Image 1 (cartoon, one colour):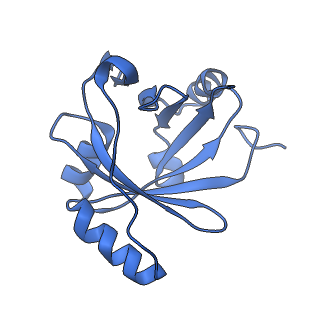
Image 2 (image 1 turned 45 degrees about the horizontal axis):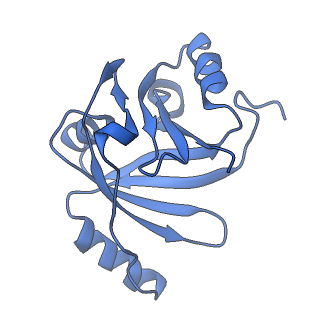
Amino acid sequence: MNTMIGTDVVVQIGLVVNDLDKTGRKFADFFGVECPPTCYSGEAEVVKGTYLGKPTNASCHMKFFETPHLQIELIEPDDTPSVWRDFLNEKGEGLHHIAFKVKSADEQIKNLEEKGYPLLQRGLYGDASGQFAYMDTQGDLKLILELLEDFPK
């Protein structure tokens, strides 16, 4: 695999929205499924998030729609500065990121930063079973790239 991050399989697309329940109902109607439950990003003590290199308490609520090929994540951020809040404030609702599962997020963050794609935000999943990292690929790829790493159980 010759991609910068060792995979070309997109596992998720993420959209930032103003009203999670309203948009969630629209997606559920579109797919003809029950609306999934709302998930909370997690407590700051667990997530240990950073935004632009500094600790953050930013959080969001999410809904996840599973399709045969990828997951669609709807994200409603709180008002704390974050990659989600900035996107919503600057660009409005819409496609925020595409995500890839990687074996070592730390290694891929370093690799991408060396190629000129800085880390925007990172943290642990709300249950600490893995980590996420948003990389600023907007200049070249026109969207944010998210790295997802599940920790071994």
